[in-house]
Each structure stands twice: as C-alpha cells, then as structure tokens.
Image (cartoon, helix red, strand yellow):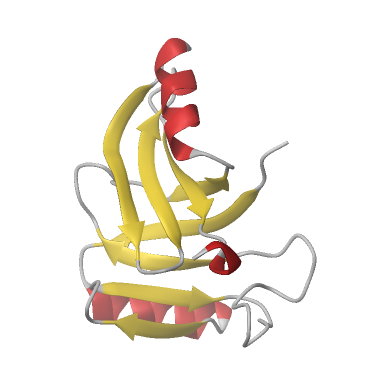
Length: 130
C-alpha cells in the first residue's frame, strides 16, 4: 500500500499565503529560493531525515499556482514513478507533469485521476544507493 507523504497548497501571493498558514495553524514556513518553493513544517520533524517524528503526520509545501496545480495536491510515495505512470495511463489517468528530480531527495510527477483530480507521485531516492 502506498502512503500519502506530503501535500502542496498553491498560492497567488506568497507573503499572504505564508502569513495565513503561520498565523492560523502555527506552521513554520521556509523558503527555498533556488526552487521558488516554501516548505511547510506542520509537525515535529527529525532534523537528520527531515521526516515527521509522529507516525502518520505529514509536512508539505506552498508554491505558485500553475496549470498543473490549481488546487491542493497530495503526494503519494511509490517505489517507481515510471511503473506508476504506466499504470495510471493504463487505468484511464493522465500525466500532467512528467517526472522531474527534486535535488538529491527524490523524483516527482503529477497525474490526473479518472475524476479530474491532480495528485503527485513521489519516489524517494535512497541516499545509500548513490
């Protein structure tokens, strides 16, 4: 079974969105200018792995709204993006953003399900295999 490991919330105005999530939910927001991405820490996180300490909890990010992400997106961790992209198309889904590397962390793609919902796929890169 593949689990939800991250979320992304699109914004039109970054400062307004950051202020909202900080003030309303107490989230810590960190900007990564090289990716123009804002990581949202929603739960206590292990500084070594950057993963939540609480089982079942997830963190996420804020990013500029675009055609592939007009609404919030959940990311599902899978063992192989390539295999899942094939499965998605075979089962009536569509690729809306092809696989891209995210630093040394993993691979990411966005797909549309049969109901028109956009979801993200996340393939973690094993640091021991590099």
